[in-house]
Image (cartoon, rainbow, N blue to C red):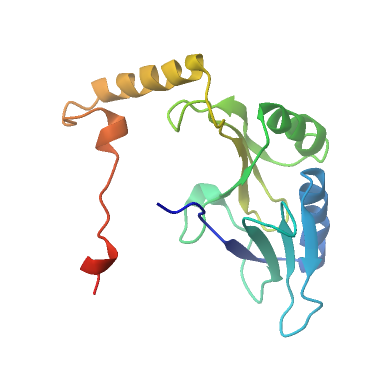
Length: 184
């Protein structure tokens, strides 16, 4: 089993300098570390948690062309990126102390999402310059019993609406991927 997922993601942004000002504020608020390529070979600014032992990072590069994104269009490309929050309080504080104060377009206020996984809690918002859709989410290592029961209840109610499903949604949704040896 893999222990880590995405290594890094890089975005091409409109109005690079203005975008960097926004991301500096946002990632600074969240306690990230940043570094620049110093324009050696290419121009990019990176943000990461847990420097120098990072798990993943986000790069911002100037776009050569394009228009402001609208995630609601669900056009080809990244729909949104979710950042890890330490806990629910960080999600709530980020919402009130950063997003609302900066007048950022919040598409979904902080809430629990019992269809995702037990205890999943998040806020969704748009980068004001390029329109990249972000999520700040917290998933507890050990969800509370009430969160687990809410997840089960929610998925059972969804299952009732799908008589074609032979197993509960938490099993029905699982897909088997071909192993390496079958991909030659």
